[in-house]
Image 1 (cartoon, rainbow over the protein chains, first blue to last red):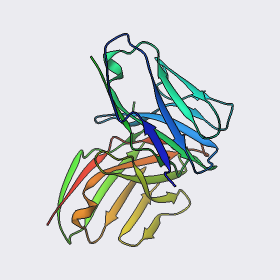
Image 2 (image 1 turned 120 degrees about the vertical axis):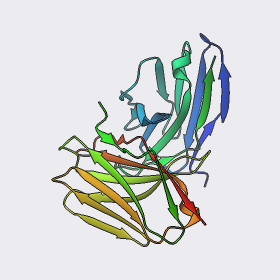
Image 3 (image 1 turned 60 degrees about the vertical axis):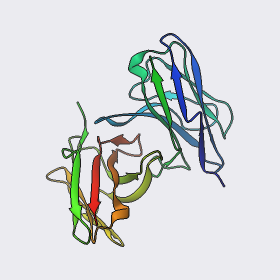
Length: 112
Length: 111
C-alpha cells in the first residue's frame, strides 16, 4: 500500500517549457488535490477534484491545468513554465472529508 | 491577506520541555482546525484536529487548544522529543470546504 505517489521527485525546466506532474493514490479516495508550498506561505491549493470526472479551481490556479484521469490519478500540467512557478508541489487525497488529507512526498520544481 | 497565520517561523526547545506552537485566524466561519507535521523531503502528515464546538483535544503527548473568542489555537507537545523536530502547519476549514493553511513553524528540539 503505497498511499499517494508523485513523479517526478525533482525537475528543472527552462522558462516556456511544459511538463506534467503525475499523482496516483491507491486508497480508493474520492477527492484529490494539488498544492504548492512556498517559503512562509504554507500550502496553497491550486486545483482539486471532489470526485472522478470533476475538477475545480483553488486559490492559485493561474498557469496550471489538471486532469482527473480516473479515480486513482490526478495530473497537474504547466503549459508554459515561468520562474514564479518554482516551488514544491504536493498532491493529496481524502476519502470524503476535506479535513484529513493524505499527502504525497512532493515534486520539487525549478524553473530557470 | 492570509486567513491563517503562524507568526513564529521557528521555535527551539530543550528535550523534555513543553513546545507551544501558535496559530491565529481571521475567518469566523472556520469550524474545524487541524495540525499537520512535515519532515524534510516528505509530505505533511495529519497530527491532531479540533472541532469548533470543543476547546481542547488531546492525543498522547499532543494537545490542541482552541480559543474562539480570540480566534487562536495552539498545539502543546509535552514532553518534547528530538523526533518532534519538524515543520508544523495549522490549517482550518469552513463547513467542509477547502483547507486553508498557515505558513508553518519550524520546531527544533535539542537533545
